[in-house]
Image 1 (cartoon, rainbow, N blue to C red):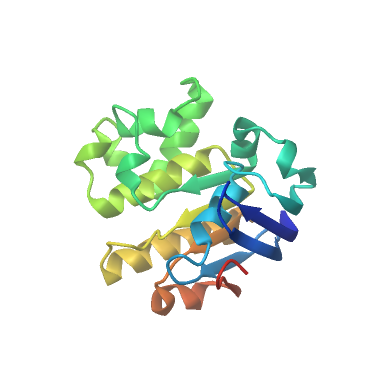
Image 2 (image 1 turned 45 degrees about the vertical axis):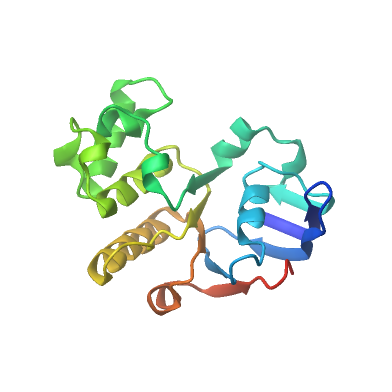
Length: 209
């Protein structure tokens, strides 16, 4: 669960990027974060991930003070999938990508293979991630994050660059996992037509509020 109470943040020497932002994201909830370019979405995502800390207000992650958590500790609670999947993939093979940075134990490999099967990627387990299609890279990035079993998943424009069929396929996967595991999802997107049928709530950022 994520909880923000009157959170504000400003980069040094600049005006506030976030002003008195308050919301909660509960277990099993799927929320859309929407706003025009420059509205503060990226800054809010960086704050949720612990890359920047609130200047004012309270931020709690699964009951803990988010300001005191290290990036590594934050990563155990919140999984993040970037818009540019290519920049997130670092493994030599699809299986290595799934297991990074953990050790390749038998249990880990079985869990990775199960997720690859669910995401229709198991046939590529020995292939380079760079050889996958754009949509397959997106699914691999999501699968690799989910292997770490975060309670919350933050996705930045996951449908960008996909055709209609691939968008629906990815969103259906997320819906299945949300319902099966109870993972909370915060999805940043401008693709309202595709995304709105899946979410329970919309948060709209405007000028950092």
